[in-house]
Every structure is written in structure tokens, then in C-alpha cells.
Image (cartoon, rainbow, N blue to C red; front, top):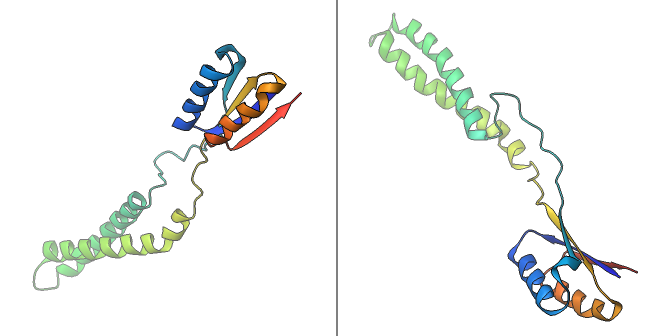
Length: 149
């Protein structure tokens, strides 16, 4: 008879395996299989999924354009092109950062986190040991437990 159980990677899995090995079955009667997750898609080069770095890029682009406008206007105004260019850099960065951040923050927060990998444990045992082994598996928080004859 074979028993099947799935676990998340945790200390409970290690405790269950050590208790099973010490009480009911030998180590060569237990097979542990690490299940792979869906492969992650690689983002485009230079693009991240962090909203703050993307907002910073948008703010810098807006600051650059604003600095040109501010310096151009500064030739006519009292403080000169350098001061007005710096003032417009700060204003442009703030506006660009805030607009991008507030428009995109909902999309970044609704992304599904990556699922944790599960581990499949296959235990070869006799019919008489099936019930106590199942109890140990449930005790240590197995996600699912099944059996085959």
C-alpha cells in the first residue's frame, strides 16, 4: 500500500518525516518529491515590477522636461535660468512621480504572489500501519493525504 501526502516546505514536514522514520517505516520506504512551480516570465530588460523605481523613472523624465521649460522661462524672470530650472525640476519630478504612482499603484498591488512550491511525500507501508501514519501526517499539517492499494 502507498500513502501520498502533500506539504508546503516547512519544519512540520521535517518533523513528520523524522517521526515516521523513527516509529513506523524505514527511510528507503519514503520518497520525497519537490514539485516545481510555473516558470516565471522574465521581465523586459531594464523594466522592474517595483512601483517606486518605475515612479522614479517617470519623475526623472518629467523633471528633465520641466527643467528645460523652467530654464527657458528663467531668462525673462528675475532669478535667472538656473534658479528657475531647479525650481521646475523639483516641481516636475514631484508631479511626474505622484501621477505615475497614483495611477499605477492599484495594478501593482493586485498582482498575485507566486505560489509556494509543494512537496509530495510517498510512503510505502502495510495496511495495518496506514491509519497511524495518516494520523502523523495530519498532525503535522499535511495539505492532502491519500492512499492506493
